[in-house]
Image (cartoon, rainbow, N blue to C red; front, side, top):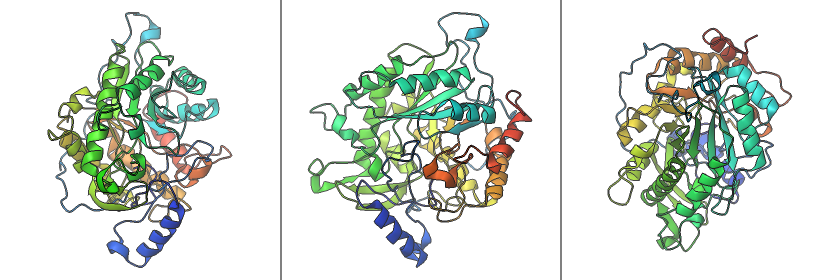
Length: 448
């Protein structure tokens, strides 16, 4: 879901700003019962904020709300995820200290690019040894020959700071027509050439003995502008979520097979996190959309025997989720912690949909925002965001048996300051210091 200002609207490219303003006004007047307002996609911009801004899909309450398990064990030790695969044997065989796996740690933070040494220092100070950092490597097409130098450096710097990298790899900023990279003649249901480009990128990264790297394949394909269709490629120039789900499932299948084919057990694959509120169908080459489903329906269609990839879940090492705090299934985001349980638990319904309750869950986006340019409804003050986030860690995330890592959106970016934990000038917002204190009370290392 990424930095939603609350519920969401779909877009491809074009006059999204105008649509956002119009829809916010409409919701203020009672549009659609107030169940959604357009939001900005907070992670689909470069770290310097220069990439095109685009709107997300509507977070609309579905006609049928999927069942969510009511009881989840919360009595596990706070720093020991139940379902995280053991990494101790991930190295080729060196049995020295250099090949030791990372310490158990669920704390993490997200960036909106590969980051730099200063922000990776801030991330390491926040989450501590063995904590997670989400990085974004945009710009991969079927012609990509290997990793950009900045990507390789980011991985080296992350490991050097004892961070576990979770890397979202995807298309260039502002060009989300992944279908253009489908294999010729495949009806957009094979992506082996693009998968080989992913393989070349990951194979060229400097990995650390005994430590994993997690690859998140693309991002929120259940949104119109994240899975763009060119006019003339779909009958009637409208693509339904069923077709999009089948196509993305094919991409994930081919990338997972290519990455696992490298033969390095340190390389772990997860899906691209889905937006909890998704689009039922999207206009090709325009900004039209129809709301009304959630990620749960999208996941079921990905695994459908009628055009999907039924054994797709078996190819995953972990499950990425964008379970933002919300009072509804795919709507009503950024409410206070005591009203946010439905959204925080959204990943439980996702795991049920794919039949893999055993998979470790990586919350590659979550968290609260402060009202402002990007956060236009709900949210809280900087102090409230800090309090709610600590409550979520202590009351839910650290005790949930499925949660392996929590990477809230996001550390620092001038374009998304409403969601930031660190100001542009490097000063800390309260959430940074409060969460760091909570982490240091549990996990030593890089503490004040």
